[in-house]
Image (cartoon, rainbow, N blue to C red):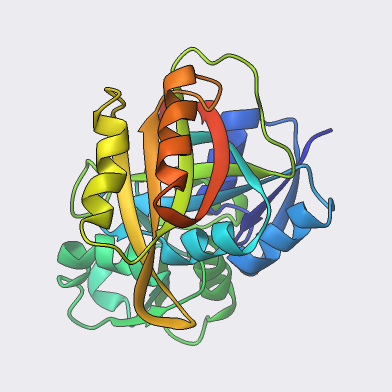
Length: 277
């Protein structure tokens, strides 16, 4: 049975993503942090890790980018999960009775318009949406709720006080599958991910982008992150159409290496499908 690590408790959106990708017949390994997920994959305690990389409303998950660079792991898959948030509680409270609402900071932000209508509620950040559902079960002194998934409600026997409370229905999170090994087989609709640190030369970024434009390679995303030991210098992450096995991609990366201090490939994988949570 395939074993998958993810950040959060049972019922987390990352677990939902893992089951959409691999089916329900998997062994799961809930983890407190993203760092723990990467460590489990690195030490072969699990077969794969499933981690969020970006949200359509709140942007990139920078911790995942940093951990990709720090660890020698590969990206072998992805999916885009439509995130539907629900207000959960242990009792069928009226909305004006709620005194506390727990959830991950991003989930609280994604539901900010609805949560503003809960005039008597204190918003309390938690490390995970499903973890906030567990907190709600234990915090029974006053009317308490959590923002989490429908799966978490079913798993912990919580009542759904209000469904689909996110600000925008077009709320998607892109998840990556990380592994110890790269995949080199053919893909129906491949994409690849890399990162690179450029030499300090005039027009370096323009030249870096040009190696792909000259070969008609479509760039899907570019992200910069600061280099800790080099103040105000940056490493660039890039997603591009095509496989590392394609001749034009190989030639582009060889060209890019000429103006780079470091160039790292995270691998090629099938472009992710869209699922609903």
